[in-house]
Amino acid sequence: MQPRRSRRLTTEVAGLKLQNPTMLASGILGTTSDMLRRTAQSGAGAVVTKSVGLEPREGYPNPTVIEVECGLLNAVGLPNPGIHSFAEEIRSLEGLEVPLIVSVYGFSPEEYAEVAAVAVQAGADAVELNLSCPHVKGAGSDVGRNPKLISEVVKRVKDAVDKPVFAKLTPNASDIVELGEAAVEAGADALTAINTVRAMTIDVETARPILANKIGGLSGRAIKPIAVRCVYELYRVLDVPIIGCGGISSWRDAVEFILAGASAVQIGTAVASKGLDVFRLVAEGIESYLERKGYGSVKEIVGLSHRG
Amino acid sequence: MRIVEVKAVKDENPNVRTLFFADDLCSSAKAGQFVMVWIPGVDEIPLTLSSIGSQSMDGFSSVTVAEVGEATRALKSMETGELIGVRGPFGNHFETISRSGRALVVGGGIGMASLMPLIDRLTMEGVETTVLLGVKSRRDLLFTERLSELSSRGGINLLVTTEDGTYGAKGLVTELAENVISSERFEIIYSCGPEAMMHKIFKIAEEHRIPAQLSLERIIRCAIGICGSCVLGPYRVCKDGPIFTSDQLRTVRDFGKFKRGFDGRKTPI
Picture 1 (cartoon, rainbow over the protein chains, first blue to last red):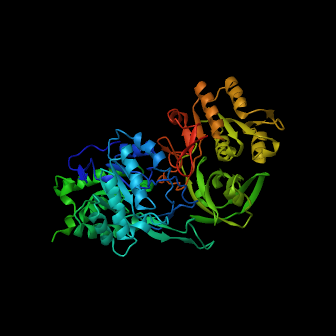
Picture 2: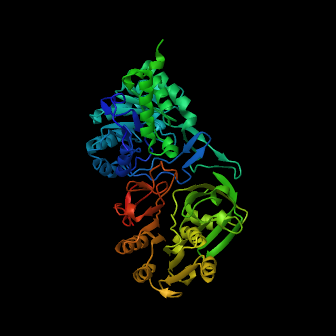
Picture 3: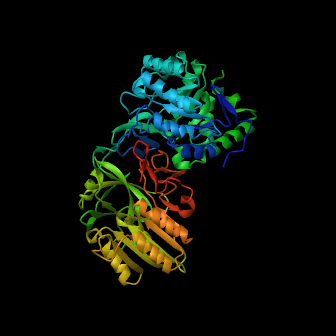
């Protein structure tokens, strides 16, 4: 069921028009056009695909996803069919009622640019650079912890595409603001914060790490305060729109991110507990909040917690 | 994830072993639901529960594994006292019909595992049930004792086919199903087995306008409906399935034709 359209909820991120500020986070369900369409129809204001690279990748053996206290731990290993195969899925989403953002990763700045170019050519409304996957060597946060590499990747991609470029940042660095600054100076149109937090879990009965990759990324409830802090710090010094991500499962979580400085929010892990209705429920909750507090638009409360 | 001890094992045939364990959540599972079984240090694989604690005499639940690769070989070689990890039960379940109806259950090979708790349920509820089991050869028969006990008690009408004719009727279980469906009236057809087989069963059911519930399989990673590995059309096999109705499958173009590999690319079935 589509949420009822509301002028209060419409917003804009780097030129993309969103009917409501909720987005499907990358890595969740975004593997096929059918699932992306179903997610859009369930009420997401925009959808982000699972990260795609140049070549097909099988990812890691199981266990790849495991529930832990207050969250979800994963090391799936960026499985994807490669951009040339995935371009088919993008093309078959022509006419999708919400913006389609393709998440892109690479093992070099050139690869990021090549993948982004094919994605945009196939019909992506924007690309989100995965500079933050914590568990694949040579890609993701191996690139995204290094401001110089971030800058190179963003520049290359900006040169290769004429659509908005989002940079998704890792919290697994000493200073996320430094990473955000590098991306923005290189031309990023928006920042997504944050990807998962490096973490692991060990089974005490068998004395073994549970994830096949041993170390993975933590998402969900446990990381929300970290993510809110990251958004808050980025908003304080940078002028581009920020998309908040990390542990959002209710309208209250979403509003917290928006007050910290997020123009939109991404939801992922909560799809497991709340189902695909979560987008509609969060959007409706934000609307009730705005109405109750007397705001005419969600844009009025972006970064409101920063006031003196 | 819960770590459980293997309490007993039973070799169904030279290639298939059932592992029994005690677990509260699995005990209250419903027929057709699956668990993710962790073989420490090796892999984690989806397996439908082949018995459910609350329905079995000793209170144990079980999974039944056929050796097809590294993970299943490791699991099949597990002995009493060894430890496995269990997540779940996950997914939806078979819906049973009222006792006035007649049910047809069609199992192909190891697919019979997910149908066993359903057969238990149907007989417990007094539904008149015909079970068709198809295997390649006599040595591939499985759940022989459980099925023949139900059959001798009059709980089910059991018919077996082998492709080489070494036991029961010679031929494919789909051929037998077609004959049975043409000559008797069923309110519902349940099936689990190779997808090509189930696709045929689905077609036969459609021709005779009988609703079917089929248990499908895809690559499963998270099992909680978020990773997108097991998608089939607009459905997630792990969350919206693994049991699908004919109403749902009628519009799924890939059913019986394509599955997705670990990298998400489509390959023919």
